Length: 230
Image (cartoon, rainbow, N blue to C red; front, side, top):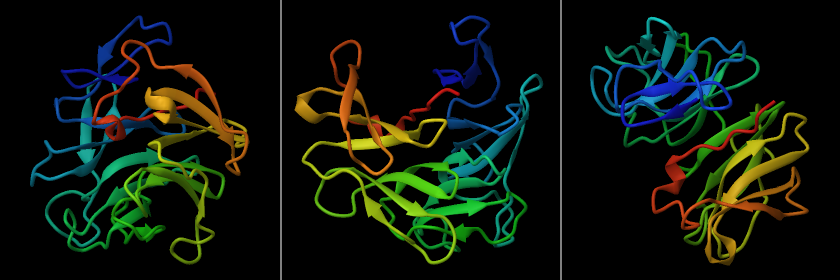
């Protein structure tokens, strides 16, 4: 699954059999449903404008729908950077600049129009990834660099908040290993971008490979997504 200049596409692992599965060039940040038949994504192309969370219900017909506004508004759920969780819920980021009915932070929704569960408190929190009852995300909560954090899902907002990285580099886009023991992420430590990995507690940080090309992913790297294949 990837994004190109004309909608979202899916393809085989070797890059073959590419086909478009969404209808707007504004569609981004796709995430597979647990059963692997649907996609959740964000877009600014839905009626009402602004970033909204949408689902592709049928990959063949490219039929889609916006998740309902929990405030009962006529347009979809305002938010960005959605990720489908293994239990069928969807986690996403929002800001009170985008959604006046929700305070800033990361939220979890069932998609049914009920009020989402607020998990974190900062408008800088983004790129959520969930394994079990633990959330990993990146944020600029202090200083000027993105760092990686974890928090427990459920209970209080920012429950069990822990900062896993702490340096002058940009660290972000966390992705859990299938067994939950490791977290992969991007970093520009040393002056060039690469793919790194660390244990789930933040220890054992090491670089796996340099990114191809110039070694940099540009100024909008934080809008991308990293996934760890099963």
